[in-house]
Image (cartoon, rainbow, N blue to C red; front, side, top):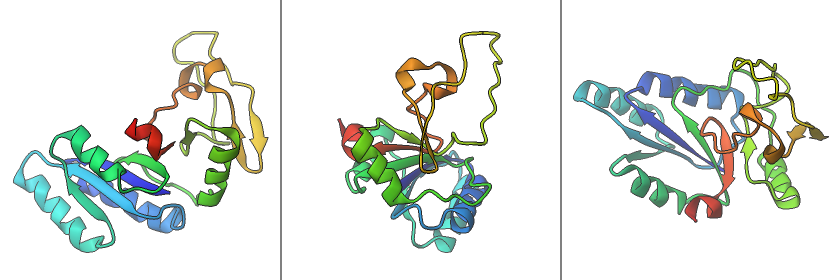
Length: 172
């Protein structure tokens, strides 16, 4: 599974994400790609520092967003995770890429979200009584639910904050 990170004008925050991956999720991703852009030379200098620090990263200066992204995705493995530069792994992540691949293959998942887990607390900020926890199936340490039968954060399957998708679905 490969990772694509989007970043604009936030090299310092991107650095924290990359450090957190090394510290708390070092074995989850194969290739790491960063699609970035900056609005002036001061921001550009911040990214130059990261180029030298993270030589293993595949850096892509964003041109036209969709074109740049699809060119990156074409070179990714079968599963692709997306993150943005203000994400962070704040604790050890025990997800294994082979477990996630197994869930995609056996359950025909549309996505897998790293952002949702046991740490969830249901808050209804909309005063909408119809938003509630979905029926959740636990497989090993992973939580599975049908997004079509839920509302709120449980139905948002296209999140770029740790959303994992099949490469072929992205390219469609």
